[in-house]
Length: 456
Image 1 (cartoon, rainbow, N blue to C red):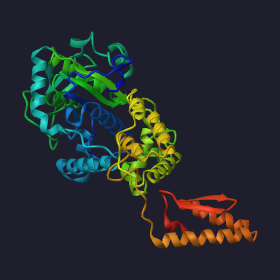
Image 2 (cartoon, helix red, strand yellow; image 1 turned 90 degrees about the vertical axis):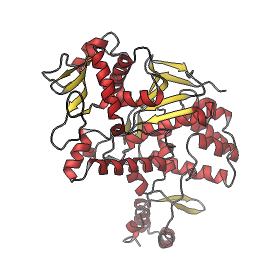
Image 3 (spheres, rainbow, N blue to C red; image 1 turned 60 degrees about the vertical axis):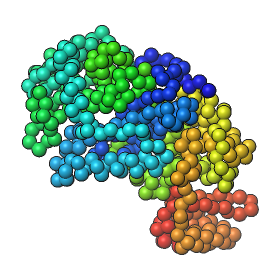
Image 4 (cartoon, rainbow, N blue to C red; image 1 turned 120 degrees about the horizontal axis):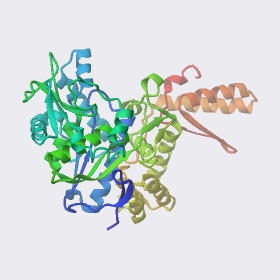
């Protein structure tokens, strides 16, 4: 068996992965807050940890790996969306959870073993909070229940590598008169009016964000499990708080042994933001004609611990590579993954290196090995290696006519008209390659026949 090595955020070292029980390998990953479409940044951890899930299944057997990814359906953003639209909270969360599942499947992600919803675990959260209060690690105040950071002060901050003093200085903490320490975090808060609420010993209210993952992880994976993952932005405060409350609630258990975090995603070199006009959802890309395989390929082309920059060049290169690989594979059945692909991928989930090995297999014409290795990376499935776009015959005829007109204009020396046609074709998403033998062309994933009407 190939040795899997992973960088453990808790220790800061790349370590050999040794599961607690090889017949029951367990992983928990923080999932989406369901109030809108999943954006490209949401897709990155889903793809990263799906790839790890696939690798673990390959190494230990599909029946011996349990992957839990939660759904947060209790959140103030959801409440605000309900108030804004007049729709019920459950209606919004049911719809957006279904969107998330559909969008993640479209980019090649397997469904996790369990996808618990926070609303189904509120009684477990109430039990855990009461237990923490009973053990002196939490307290009730003005309808709230709060975790007492001072009760875990010697350990709090180990994951993020920060002292409590540094956290107070650098974090935006909620200042409230009922807090004993500014860093104490909310386990339970009161619900008034139309806000969702549940009965508890501290009054009608709802759980804080952090407690939900601790309750669900314990219920589905136990007090000790192998891997906890998520985006790097979750290290503090979310994961730090998960550790504190879980370890204090279950002092004889160790919670997660290995912590993995992926880096952030950029778009055209900048942080994704609606105000910058570079905010992309997975559905946006699919509707633009980008294949799910290309989205996944681009996300895997950068190592998970490095910032990933999404841009048109990466997207187009992904589509082109997948087309070439599809031609190599033809009708061949998938064979076992190539051992070198498995070895490279097992070295701290080196997806970029594994993709380089797939390029080698394609160059060698090893169709079965390429198909099996692509499947290990999630690059084969219902849409093997990305889909070909269905182009309306009228669009194809129009492009052919314009290419011929451009060739005639060049031959006649009318280079202004030739350049005008080329510009229109490029703007419409047609790729042109001029050679000594003539001009070759193909449709890009963003092809839009409507943009050619004036040029035609």
